[in-house]
Amino acid sequence: MVDSREAILIGVKAAHALHRDLGVREQLERSAGGRIDVFGAISKLGATLMFQPLDKLLGAYIPSEEPGILITTKRTLPVQRFTGAHELGHLHMRHEPSLDDEEILRRAPFAPNSRLKRQEQEADSFASMFLAPSWLLALIVQRQQWPAQALADPVTAYQLSLRLGTSYSATCYILERHRAISREQRERLLSFEPKQIKRDLLEGYEPPDWRSDVWLLTNRDEGVLIEGGRNDLFVVRLRENSSAGYLWDFDALTSAGFALVADDQEVDNPDLVGGVLTRRVTARSSQRAHGEVTLQESRPWLPSKPLHELHLQYDLRGPEEPGMWEPELMRVLQAA
Image 1 (cartoon, helix red, strand yellow):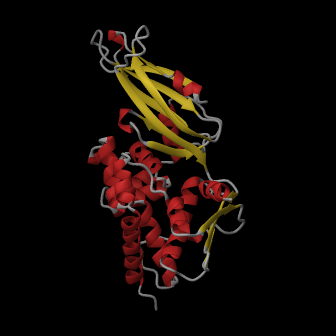
Image 2 (cartoon, one colour):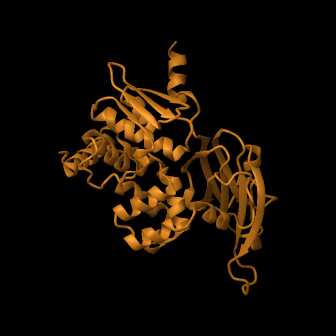
Image 3 (cartoon, one colour):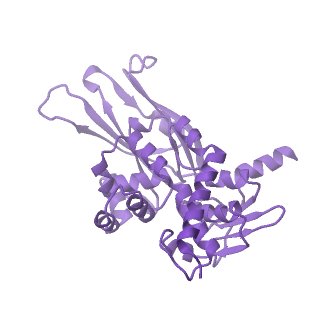
């Protein structure tokens, strides 16, 4: 009989060890946060990473002198990332070959299951801990300045899921596992459909595809890398000192290929004359794109002297497409 608790503990310890060996925490703290680069970790461990339109599998691990990992292209980026983390666990812990289907998404990674193969339990707990360690949760919450009670709010939980690179439902369980919310609060969060949360964020705008994610961005996202899909939307909320002649200029977004689909102002205090407003702009991506953009709040007649700036980095190329993982392919081509 499989010792489930021991298998879970082995997976958790292996995830922590790999974080340490790869310097993951230090890297994310220096770069002001972001997602854990699971595909990069696979590459650093020497495995060839390929994406293919697999029919009945989410992923596979093939050990050899030159190990390989396959991940499906038929699922969303969060599913690709979890599958990648699961296969990375097999790779890091030197497991036997593994073909992994939808079951890896249905299993509770920290629930003892004596009927499950030991290496699968190890890989499950490894994947969950590798993608969402407690220190990363704390780093994101601190950066966003979310109060503890806000984590029980569906909008906050959804925004956290985008920054972790995990699904909304998985993030609800992650919050409970790290004791940030109670079981009752987790159940309440799961009663909200992501589509309704997106609808509330967009305030009337109907996107072409509701599968797109909606990022709520503020000055607290300064310098952070936004990793998402090619059709994702940005709702940018920034305080604007318009009474003093300062206006946010969003032309940089359109120059970068984004379409501005809404531009509104929110009055913080309607009874206060000359008060600070909040500018709310919704931008939509329509292509695989990556780069950076700088937004400036300045007086139109003095654009060279901005009062505030917001630097955003973005990589909207998900989900991964068929073929070798792109950064690895580029290295191979450069070495040829």
